[in-house]
Amino acid sequence: MPTSDDVDAFLTETLVGSDPALDAALRAQHDAGMPAIEVAPVNAKFLHLLARIAGARRVLEIGTLGAYSTIWLARAVGAHGRVVTIEAEPANAAVARANLERAGVAERVDILLGRGTDVLPTLDGGDPFDLVFIDADKESNTRYLDWAARLGRPGTVVVLDNVVRGGEVADAGTADSKVQGARRGVEMLGSDPRFDATALQTLDRKGWDGIAVAIIVDPTPGGTG
Ligand code: DHB
Ligand code: MG
Image 1 (tube, protein in one colour):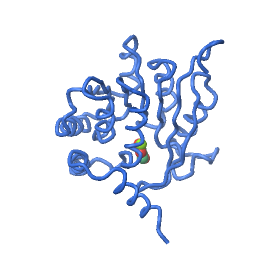
Image 2: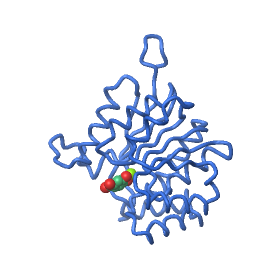
Image 3: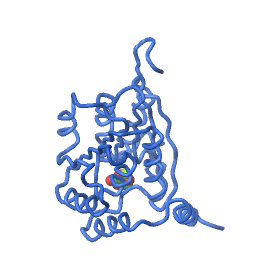
Image 4: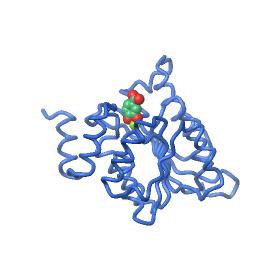
């Protein structure tokens, strides 16, 4: 009986394939001793396709790590698009920068160094983002979602990673702060009138997890949604 890893391998080989720049990015991330917690290839491509479907030209990413997902997003926005990505760890940002350069997309990406909660207020007043991908410290999920709503516009796509955490999200009494963050993020997406959202469970080489996908709506009477 095939396993979910066999299915992941089949889907990845068939639909994603391998790519020298992405392979090199993951090698560089590994060689730098960074954790292999980037999104799985099938999910990275899902994110890339969402950005293309939305026609996104301005993308915000919170949590760069080694820029694996950033490369996918940068390819989605095209040569005239922009990806702003926030990374708290300077060593990660250096690896990310080199990976973006190797992938040929560095000129369309701004890496902003610092914690999301410090950097996000500096983006206030700029052009709205068309897609926001939140994949950083899970404890800050609700603050990041609030910033996504403020820095987006009605129609902006918001994607939140790691909302299932091996199923633990269903445990209301969890003591794990990352799971609590995942749970609060989902609860906010369900209750905050600025979002219309759902979530999908995922089972891939990283195990059992999930991604929430939302659209920002205008909560005022007569607004969109
Ligand atoms: C963790 C973070 C992630 O963004 C992820 O995709 C998987 C795991 C973590 O911090 O444990
Ligand atoms: Mg993640």
